[in-house]
Length: 390
Image 1 (tube, helix red, strand yellow):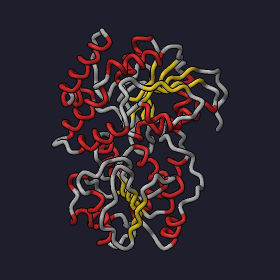
Image 2 (cartoon, rainbow, N blue to C red):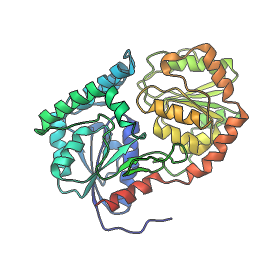
Image 3 (cartoon, helix red, strand yellow):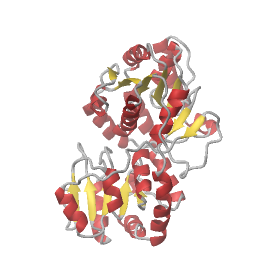
């Protein structure tokens, strides 16, 4: 159902991180522009290309480049533990906090409301200082506070002290789990997880492009026409463990024909068996996923919802952050075999899981859930929340 027209709202969108942290904001920006709202985006400079030309773009201070992000991703995924991984990302995200705070404060000027990524504590502090009401974007539900507070105590203290120095005001902080005082938008389907108990928290549904037919490259069309195929995709996650080669070998050993997406700067495996088709470009998932038999992916919130909307079984190989949550959530709903971390890939468990992707019971559950998820419109829900909060 179309939304009723609202008066023009001046909206600030502030985000950074990987492409998966930015593409949903670009989709929201297009929806806001279509409703004649004035949109300002505050993000890392190389993300300008994702957003409509008509928005105002403010480059976040410090100038993090694509190369720096790629190097940090590689470095973080080589960390000896998840907590070291978090610290390495925190160094990049907040290492230029002073410059970032100044551009964030400038972005807040003249706005009615902001939507700020849960990662972006600098912009949260800037909005609070400016008295600008802000909503929070998060790609997973908030963890239980006492448990998370104990685990993250050191990181919370370090980042909180840094922001206190930058802003000149004390700031108690929960790193990557700071809820909005207005409303926190959890970008996921209520069909996949239980409704939150906390007030001011909303499950919006996934922020996906509308499903529509799109042409695929001719070589890919030919590959798909020759029989059922498995899609293997890990977005922009670096391959620091020989992950792709291991999965290609497992597909070949279990008789799967496989379409393998390898995005730069990752490189395709040196040895590609017969029945494996490698692509190195982005693909239109809304058009592609309904045409594959199953998917192996990293568990980002966007890819997870694309796969569920298409009604396809999935094996999740999580690498970092919220991907572990979504790996467990999809398995708990019976939508795929047990996940396996990228650091734990081995021939025997991979063969077992690839065989499970052919389980007709998993396929039936995935197909049954797909229509309800496809009917959701998370972007429209976010637009309504921003219009109501002005």
